[in-house]
Amino acid sequence: MDTYGFLHKGYVKRTVTAVTQASSPYALTSNQAGQVFTNTGSTASVTFNLPTITDSDDLGLEFTLVKLTDDNVVIDAAAGEYIADSSAGGQIQNTTAGETYATITLVSVSTSQWMVKGAHGTWTTT
Image (cartoon, rainbow, N blue to C red; front, side, top):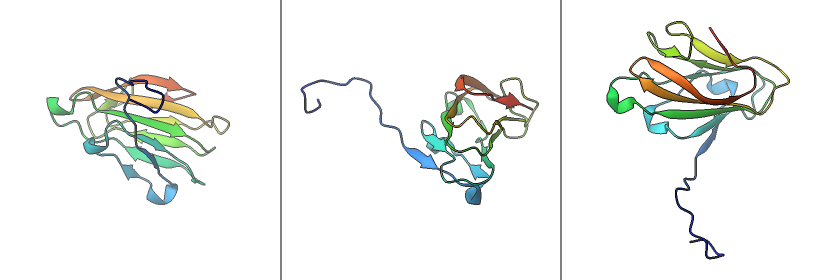
């Protein structure tokens, strides 16, 4: 219950992690699922490497990435895995300079596939 007496069911506070190009590529881990990652403070492209989906225990992993600067945000799949309609081991990226606040949420749906749960902005697969 909050200070006004309201009960908030299902509210989960998310950890937000800023990743700069100095930490790029940044390896996401399954233990970080559910967190939000940004490129706050970056002055160059930032790459995020998705974790390998090893078995059915990894299904449902979810990552949200937010582009808060003009710099590129690139998300790489592990070898043999796909992001939406990407090639095997491909990527999805936002390289549109004017699209600060572009967001994307990815969810693992099989042992080789990440789907886009939601997105805002221009995201392109390769």
